Structures are given as structure tokens and as C-alpha cells.
Image (cartoon, rainbow, N blue to C red; front, side, top):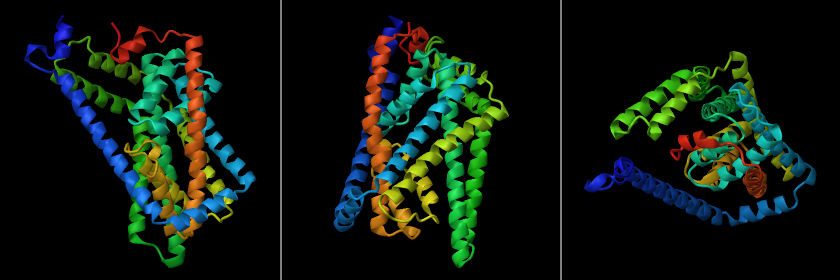
Length: 372
């Protein structure tokens, strides 16, 4: 009865949790409206470039089959590296999950990431459920998601930093070093070092998260058995999972490899549309587009990645039509093909779950607040 009163806010009106849900709903609605607005802007810009789009479509229709296969292969290696990354981090946390199942999960997770609003929370929850069903503890599953997120940030920071350095060196060779460019390089290096420090000292971040959870619990007036208390207990157990310096390097290398294979898919896309790669700025363009597309506005960064990638490529010497053609070819493989294959994988994962029920148990329900 006390729980019912807490859920409804008692006779005095709606509860604090209800107001939180309402606020979250308004926030999601605003984000969707912003995403639609960005999509409309992109469409308007594309309509204004009909001639370039038609020319780019012609280039894509005459794509080189060998380079297309290479692009698909590179993207497959990127997904395989991500699956291997999950397997290694799960192993370090004490959970053993076969690689084929994790590769299927990666394909499914990619489709969720590309199409479902609410990223990265939705895909993280999807992976969490899979890990739990495969026998990982709540702490191990949460620790794996947390560690992979930071490792990917370190890997992308390193890729972006290398892209900045390459672009600066090429620009300096042509017109001399730029103080602003040097400053950007230094900032990028500091970001990489800071991200690496977070990965090495995850325990400090987890302590901060745990303290924040306790603060929310005090403000919400929750009982010790509430959801926030269970989350805090999971964070405490996550702090007890070690990650040696060697394992840290292993995890960062795998995360970086996943990004680099995805970048290789972009490089192969230039060959597919019969145009040269603008090496001076292609890595920087790729890194910048990934960062822009990671903003939780439009699922999969649709429109944002294409626009930012094409703009930076043109800024570094690529022709407009070849750049647009290469970007569209890249996104056909990286986004649209990933959706088609990924949602088929979602169905296969769901079928496996129905055929082979596992003990995702009450502990799994507890962490999402559904347990007894």
C-alpha cells in the first residue's frame, strides 16, 4: 500500500516520479522536433543541389563491384571487432560469451542504434539484457557497457587527433603552420589523455556516479530497497571488477580497430564511385562526422553524418559531386545495409531467446526496477 501511494503521489497529487516521466516525455518530444527540423533543412539543401545529386547517383549506379565488396568487407570487420571487444570486456569481468552470438548481437544492436530514438540508452539496454541472458551478472553487464563506452571514446579521440595532425601537416606543407591548428592539436591530445585516464581510473567515475545516485535517492525519499538503491549496489560491485594496464590496452586497441575498419569502408567507397581519396582531410572528415552524428538528435546521425562528412571533404579539396557520391555509397553500406541485416538479426536474437530461455532471473528485473 505504501508503494502504491508512493507511485501515485498519494492523495495530494502526482508523484515526483510521474513529474519526472512527464519531463522526460517533453524532452524527448523536443528532441524529435529538433531532429525533424534538421531533416527538413537537409532535404531543402539537397533539393537545392539536384544536379549534384543526379550526377552522384549516376556515379553510384556505375559503382565498381570489387570496391563495393571491399567496403562491405571492411564494415563487416568493423562489426566483428566490436563483437570481439564485447567478448574481451565480458571475459575480463568474469563472463564467458561465445563470439558468434556477440556478432549477431552487434548486427542487431547496429540496427537499433540506427533507427530507434533514445540513443544510446536503448541499444545499451538491449545489450544489457543480452549479456544477462547469457549468464553475466548485473555488475558484469553494466561494467561491460560502461567500459566499452569509454574505450570507444578513447579510440575515436585518437582517430580524430590523428586526422587533425594529418590535416595540419598537409596544410603546413602548403602554406605554413597555423597557430589555431596547433591549438586544436593540443586540445585533441588533452582529450585523448583525459579519456584514457577515465578508462584507467574507472573506479573514480563509478564512485562519482554512486554518490550521485545516493543524492538522488535522498531527494526522492526512496526506501533502501528502491530502484536507486539497487543501482547503487550494482555500481559498488562494478568497482570491484579489475582491469589491468595490459587489458586496458587490449580494450582500447579493439575499440580503435572497430573505428578504423569503419573508416576503411569510407575509403573503399571512394574507389567504388571511381574517384580519388582526399587523403589530406578524409580521416578528419570521418572523425568529425562521427562526433557530430553521435549527438542524440536523429537516430544513426541520419542527415547529420552525410552533411558534415561531405562539407569537410569538399573543404579539403574533394569535388562536390565525387564527395557526395562517396558519402552516399558509404552510408548505403554503413547505414542502410546495416539496418536491413540488423533487423533480421534482431529477429534471430528474439527467436533464440524464445527457444532457449535462460536465467536472466530476478536480478535482471531488479536492475530495471521490475523485481519483487
